[in-house]
Image 1: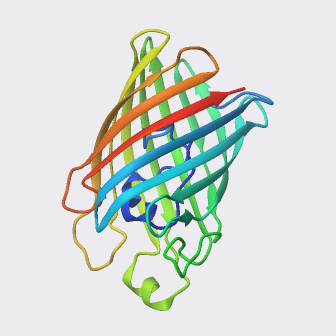
Image 2: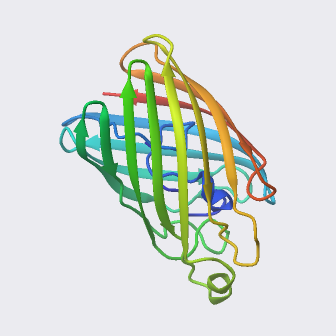
Length: 244
């Protein structure tokens, strides 16, 4: 459940920034860990396009405060030059309604100014965000929808003037469990362009797979394509999730 990456270079693709989505997805589900259960996610992605050709990584720890509420700490990093930690984020997920396979959750987050602004790893100030999640599960299929807003504030005046302060995003996804070990996913979405001077809004489509050899470990891989000439043109990633 990856938290919003509120810093550069992840901000190169605001449409691809999610609040809690399981890698490689962007669209999140309403699932929580359960009371006193934990999850660790480690993943890395190779990104190309939008003036950036490099590698990013993410570490997220999630803890279940109750059966319907999670808290999380997210630590995104840039592995290419300039390498370093981006803005650390904290947040929680609350599943507030569920009935007959339909459920809803809300995910407020806050990205802190922990990265180096001088090295291009931070916006230089904190950035809150929130998303509303809807989920419908039937048999082996799960259908997902997200709508959200992301604060895109900057400390420097020239960057504040050049970029939108609020970015709206929306996405849809579907997952299909082939068997207890294999799940395939498809995901698509769009967001407002963070730059005021540009007309097009970045959109994406991705597909991937998750392999779960047991109830403790998930291994995943996915590929994402930009659908317009804004945002990254391609992103490939792999990840590991451990539940305990």
